[in-house]
Length: 100
Image (cartoon, rainbow, N blue to C red):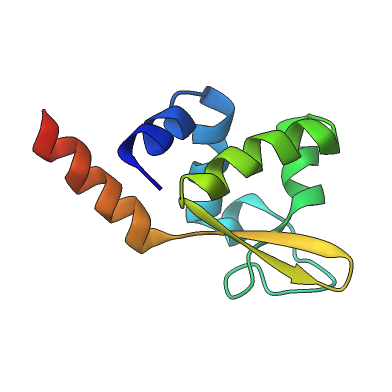
């Protein structure tokens, strides 16, 4: 998880939108059958539907966000849930600020 991977993740409007929604999941997503929106994260299917993209497209976006360390995946049954990693986001902000 380098500054470059963080910047790559942030360089896409859809990924920025996902990060924004995950900041306040109860406002942006309906309740889930499995997993708590805040504790466990948001199901990938809900994110894909809200973003208006296919599951494979969402998977590509989430892979970049996970690689950058900005979100954490969690498996529950057959579903993947995503939650922001606030510590890593703060670290990335500090790294970017230090280089500017």
